Length: 124
Image 1 (spheres, one colour):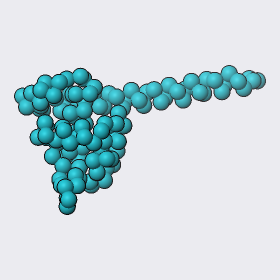
Image 2 (cartoon, one colour; image 1 turned 30 degrees about the horizontal axis):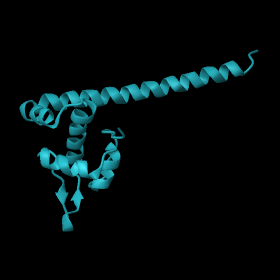
Image 3 (tube, one colour; image 1 turned 90 degrees about the horizontal axis):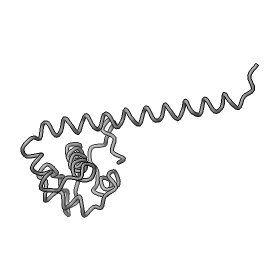
Image 4 (cartoon, helix red, strand yellow; image 1 turned 30 degrees about the vertical axis):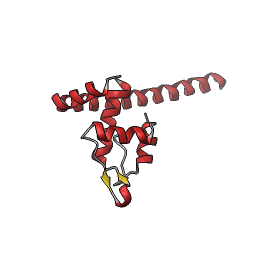
């Protein structure tokens, strides 16, 4: 998933941009709008959807529950309805841990590259 919650965002996103961020179809996002009241993008002239930061976070949460954790739509809807605060907190923790993991993997690759280059250079 390409979503990065720490990145600075612009004010509005199109449905195509959101679909690209999460690697899903636009039709799936429109379907989720009907199924989850948390996802409610503003509609400009001619029904063009404009996703705000709150909508982006709601899509990320639904994506996490449905696509990453494998919950059914009913299960995800019920979880958000009954225990939204805990669900959001858990999602934030998982997101932070993923970013830490990516950073650690990046550091490991840099260290491995350093070790390889030191082995190739003859010592004194």
